Length: 212
Image 1 (tube, helix red, strand yellow):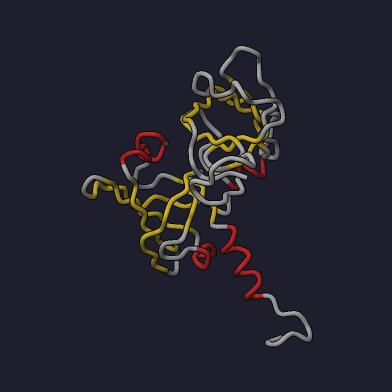
Image 2 (image 1 turned 180 degrees about the horizontal axis):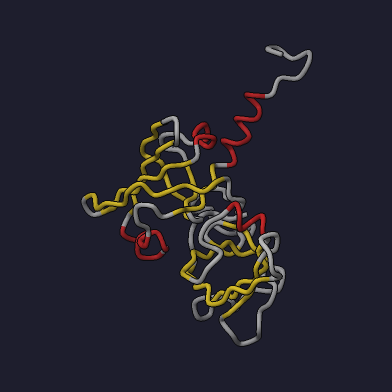
């Protein structure tokens, strides 16, 4: 589990194919900030742009770790198939503060940035989410964009997408990769897990239950 509070920006430095063919995944080598991996161990979970991954190698004294990402995960996420900056968050510990919201690290869909524009001292981010995720997005609800816990300020449904608006404060722009987004950028989205459970409970009707 995670909180959506980014704790470092890493850089994918190398991407190796596990084998030839589209059905195989890749091995990523990520450089973390100095000292970031001091309390990390093999097998730990670290979220990359909101996608939970397992530390496969952790050379002693180095700031680089590797993970293996499956073809399925590559197909369902964005920004993890090539070199570049990624948001990092280590898994939540039982005694940690829950500063954002509960995030599982399981990407629900890939959205597209419609715009990112200055709005006073902050920035307004507009994202087009897949229509199927629209029922999970609500005014003042939570959503994780590339692993960052954010609050939705406005939602509009359209046939081709569900648009939502977010306000990004300067701290978020400076300490995550969201400041690098542009119109057309693809982003990993994870909806609030509470919304998932609510949707399931409201839609499920078993034989013998009222409304079945």
